[in-house]
Image 1: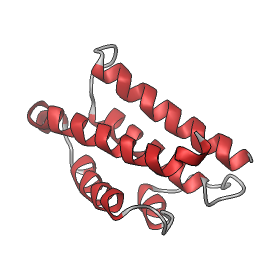
Image 2: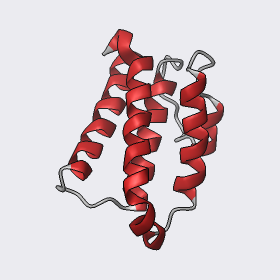
Image 3: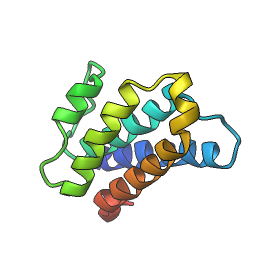
Image 4: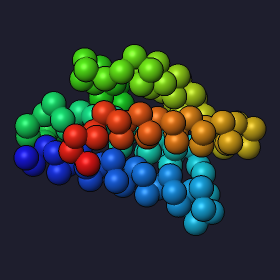
Length: 119
């Protein structure tokens, strides 16, 4: 039960950060985009882990531990976003900002579909 609460919390926080960016409350930064992406991964991972891990997993560890049951569409988007966000700089953000926001929005929509039974 605790893992469901954790998964829901991670997802809800990622969704609220994205909404703040979309409404102009917060500016989009590379760090914030990566945080939203990571929170989505943590939400997916929380479904598989009964207890919170003692050591904070790295981004690569989170990606490697994605549940096998996630859709192929989500896996493809995770791979694309990882490549874009890891190499994203503030200068690139000006050119790619709208595309990044669209992909993050689609990513969270797909994460929500995976979490639908507990949301």
